[in-house]
Image 1: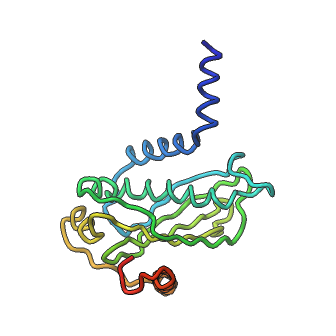
Image 2: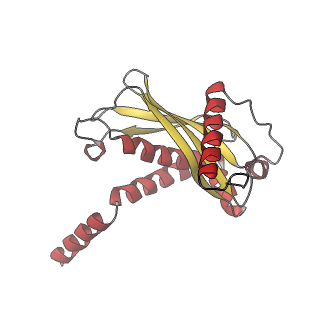
Image 3: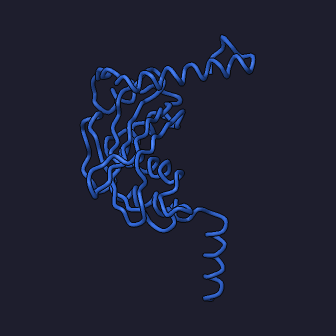
Length: 202
């Protein structure tokens, strides 16, 4: 029986990223029991620590782990401000359409950090978010990420009105976000032209 259990665990760890699903469950439970955040534009934070399975060959947090932790932080954010449940009720899906991350200083083994997530604004197709990795050691912003969260089968404005029961004005986009959005638009245009789809929708 013990061998069967060990064999099953080994098979699971070989075929699935078990830690990913365990981390996701932890974030879900944590967000579920925390109070709702009524302000859709409020910054929220979630804490983390660099563990052995996060490390690269240099002993730093692996580049890909930053992106994964951002996924969990966004999910936590959406759970607390109502975006997740509202999108489900409206039949919408939230999918990452683009992201960019700038690394400023490495996070090292056992270094505690928090990810501060906030919605910067939205357009007719997507939400735009900023996520910061802030070292708890000295408050330094170790990395910063911009994310475009596409909304499928609905619109951001509809979701926000469903949550807030009123129309909310989108704040003015920061300059760095405007430049990034222009880059995304230029990249899409170039790829459509390259594929012979110029003039058609994405």
